[in-house]
Length: 103
Image (cartoon, rainbow, N blue to C red; front, side, top):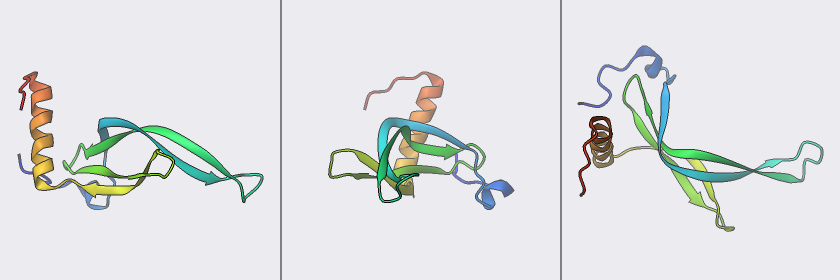
């Protein structure tokens, strides 16, 4: 299967239909306080590391950064390289077909 073949017009204007998958991790970030603007509240959320568009097949992964206190933060998204894309395709195919190949 070739990736991004004939993308939908919604995907051309960057309105993708995402499905999250991959490893589940907890990320943290700080937001300014509502009552006291100089104070910060720490927020955490459990997220997946990868996502793919169900319309055009675009696959991206989170760009993670280790914080000084040992937690993870997400600073953006990177598109998968061709080798990572092929590995994801084969894992997806194996998962759908129920074939377990060790290697």
